[in-house]
Image (cartoon, rainbow, N blue to C red; front, side, top):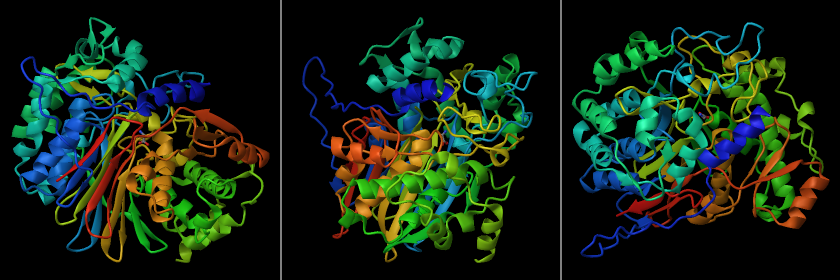
Length: 579
Ligand code: GLY
């Protein structure tokens, strides 16, 4: 039940299904000239989940900034315009492509469990899970990493001054913005939790009533916080903001202390990479499961001629779904924070292993998830020896450097807590741990000891920022929000572009399917598959559940002539814009 109820609300929070057009703001005296957003351009491009955040990033490129400057500015702006999805009180991952050296780097700025966290902190005296303790309120919050991550990547690779890249976000927080249906919908879904927190209620409601679409959201406390961070990024971890967060935690039985904040550091990690046909696919390594399972599924598909089978044909879909099922079974057993457990990455992404698992797939019949197990540790050892809420943004600059960045506060408005006086929405990332063996989290994902809670440990993620090169040149940068569905969303966009040769708009907009081993259910977007295909999949034994839609992906492809084409997901309200 927990899964069903929360998945539905997540659908509402993270995966909106209505396409909106951007309204032109009218002044009383004259109609403002519309800005035309170019989703095909030559000099540079930004795609994000909100037009104002895209604009913030694009303005950096136009001032001579590089992909990192634009990505940092866009990320700060998203934190203001989509406070329900991602922000300063959360964390994330980024992948960065440097065209000159053809190198890809991965930065982990995911949240960490507080030092006082314990394995059983969400259980009562009888060992039962305490409802909502890992999702709502102060105890659900993990130590945020967003500012440390943004500062780290900018310090090393940015070109414009730090103050310049934060400036658009400060302005958006100060002058405000008209809220859209996504904000209103997220607020309605999380209202009972938001009302329990005085600052959240004050900022995101009118005396407890939700905003109407088009009303202006102004966030003066967040603007002040951003100003402090623009003067001194360490203020969040060792200065006045750290003091405010720790004091609010202490007053409300939260676990985060000044020491947690003081010792937070982002981590550079080696991306996971593999070959898929002509392409080199690189993505986020653990503590995200995204890259490992994206590559695992691509390996299982291998050289199957999907194109001849036909896009969304029952045979192609069946192979995709069964591959997803296997990958998510391995995820539940083996994936966790690599600084705490040994994750058999090499084996899981090895083509030899994929071939072995491929043989288990019956081409005509769905294998019930109860019969699909994670790989036997002995086999794995041999192989090793052989060898709704989150936000994504994608940037490519003039030199064809790229950043693919996904960050989050987890569910809509995170823990529903705004740290007193700071305007910062705090995450509920602790729910991404396996809070008890085989107890599904808000996304229905189960896990075991590999992803158990421990002090300072990072909860397992599904975020899959991905960068693909061909012949040493950038080809595609892509990512999406959507919790457990992120991996399969990115997978399908990658296949749509690389195998089916769809243009990027179609690739991002195309209907999706999702299977995550448990629950043993195939999610299909409404209007996504025709009746005969659904009947065929049911005949093969798939238990199908239609859902309105999920994800809010975006992507940029480099065209054969070197120009850029970008697309924001029509399921959201994002925008691609280049020059
Ligand atoms: N909070 C969702 C994820 O990291 O996968």
